[in-house]
Image (cartoon, rainbow, N blue to C red; front, top):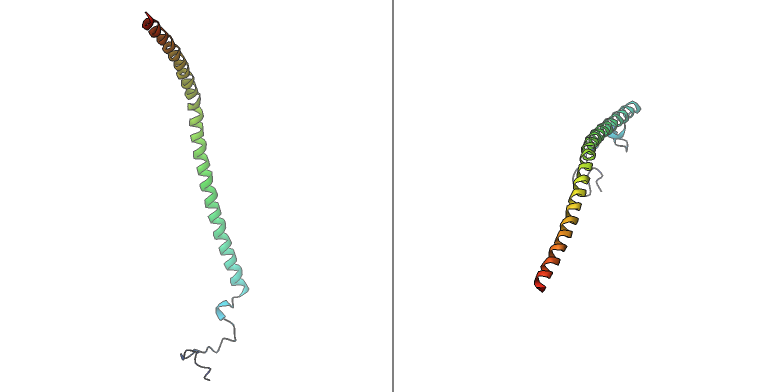
Length: 106
């Protein structure tokens, strides 16, 4: 069997520097440290960006909440006024129905 060929009959490229290990994985410690620092910095920057976006969103929500808090008492006041009108109209309707029934009996 020819060891210079793959099982499919293609010729294998033999690299003299390789001694059973992939040289692309043979990174020096300083390169690994630099890569870790870069990746860590990227993650920190991304998290900082997310935190800033959340802070901006929170400020916008707080502004909207302030507007709603300003409007809410007026809405409650309008609701109470309308409720009083409904009770008044209901009472008036009951009295008119009573008068109609009295007129029908005559």
